[in-house]
Image (cartoon, rainbow, N blue to C red):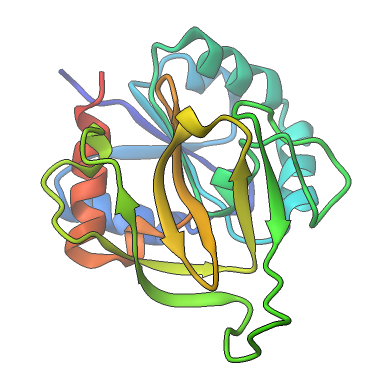
Length: 206
């Protein structure tokens, strides 16, 4: 199958690092903020670095909200949200006032480690993911470790959407899935061999 991979450029993403890793893997991708490009893609990556409301405003300004919702609900094109890109797939966030995309029944909450001041916020660095090995996205990854940088975490209302958990003072959702829409709190593009396998597995989704 020919891949037509779209990385959504909405002014909030770590696009260069993702493109570099995909190039290393021999996967050709393009960046776009044009809603018309999404429906012709084989796979869509929604990156994200920054604040929740700024991300949602940029998606609104580029008229990307409904196309993303329609594609996710249609269930034919795989979508992967990374870090903030995962969080904006949710209903809302304690970080902002705007509604999220609502593709996953979940909320985004601020880490509160007042009982253990040794746990710094943001959660930054390498950590393990307790992954559902039946999920293709985690195929061929033993003892999965990934690189995290985030102050907010996802809490899913539907336990069936959770496919990965990580502990940082408490367990939080580090990966979720609904249909062909996947969210990853960690950065696969910064996670070396583990992240490379994530991308390979994502592009095996059809």
